[in-house]
Image (tube, rainbow, N blue to C red; front, top):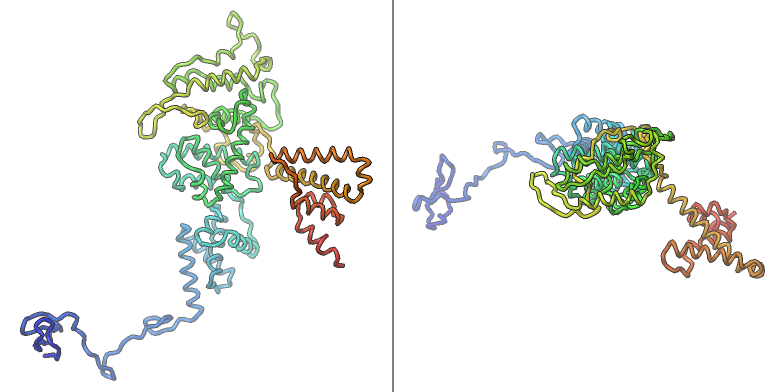
Amino acid sequence: MSTSRSCRRCQKSTVIRDDISGTCICTSCGVEQEFDNFQHSFGGISGPQGTFVRVGSSASGYDLSYREKKHYGAQKEIEAIALNLNLSAATSAEVRQMIETITEGEFGCGIWFPVLVGACSYVVMRKNNRSVAIAEVASVIGCDIHELGRMVARIVDFLDLKLPEFDLVNHLERAIRTCPSFAGISKDTMDKMIKQGRFVLQCAVSWFLTTGRRPLPMIAAVLAFVAELNQVQARIDDIAKELHAAVATSKKRYKELLQTLVKVAQALPWGMNITVKNIVQNVPFLIQYIEMKSRSKRGIGNGTKGFAGFEVKEVINQCLQKEVECATYDCEAENDSQYFDIKNRNGIPSFPSDGMEMVKLSQECLAKIYSKFKNAYDYHEPTNESGECHRIKRRRGSGVPEHEWWTAESDLCKKLSLKQILEKNLGFNALPPSFVAGRLACKRRREKIMAAKLRINMIMQPSNAASDGKEDCCLLEHLQAEKQQQQGVKVDHIDWEDCIIELLLLHMVNEEEIEKGHYNTLLDLHVFNSGCS
């Protein structure tokens, strides 16, 4: 069958259509014509019929209703969030059932629905005792953490649920296994870090470092501390970002942890020489001391104990024994523990075994012995995981000795309940830092109230202020000197807090209420609404 079109090559009108293949071929040059296979179709009763497809329709022409489309979109949203949170099929079904119960089978669509799905996923995981942080769920959904928290509170209140406490230990173990910062360490090192992390974290719980605080920054601080103990290259900034914790808060918790360990280490004979800079190097001795104290119950004293309630001879013999030194370092040293064996000429101890408190060893003597032991091993040959040895100079405070000081025999290496942790005697009784900060803030406000009363009295009653001005001036100077000493700079002006306190005092507000520091509430009650009856 010939066509009316000309050949694209020879420009001759000798193009015909092949009846078998349906392609157009030029009979003059034999070239197959490209993109010329369109066949006209004629409509009508006998012509071919097409299928009309539009949004909201199936191939059969059935239109979905608004409710069905909403359910379909909600199911896709639930599946996507469950996939990003690594939820199992059973957990995903439980999340869908919870959403169906809350919405009474209507589900939903809009920007609020992903927040509802994330909140239900968080509640289900917490019910199943799976360690997950609300910040992690918020990062997956892409919403604000406070918005997600409000949705979680509404769900718990609507369903009348009681979620278990956030498991710090489980989340720490999961973080060590999943964080990219610890991806390159060996399995033995990881197991040791998990046990050490349990030990330090449960000690922090006993010292109330987690009371009233968000848990993730404290976990990041413990992970950074344990990584430094095992010489793992992991920065606290990276760990905090991987845990979705605030970097500044994590650094603050790390500093608080080191400061608390320094306070605990003051019980050691050389505790006066331990600071934040060298606390990591003293961790082996400190952990042995805490393990020994944890074996005894709280409030029970023992007359056979030496300094700070522990046996000095046992600790020194364990820390300074010659076998450990020779197995760890290449150089040899004397066994300093012989200086603590008091014997007479016949080799018989000159005092009974329970008379260790009779030994009078000064702090300076023990500090010199410890310094001699520490300075004797500034050089060592560490071995990395690949088996290569290289000699480096150890910087003081940068690491711990490489010998096996960690035995993992303490009960604190196991997961304990809160009651069991608080029953342990760790050698240091601390108050919650938030409570201490609150007491200091109340004391500072009390001083500001006293100074404001003096200024008001000097203006309103100058004659009375002149009669007994000596005592008031001395008190005012004392308060100003303490303020300058605390701030480190000379303060000659009155800040906004002093002005608010003076205003509240002029409106006869109770001083105990001012000490609490709720200035906005007090101003609304006593100043701005004072004229309203």
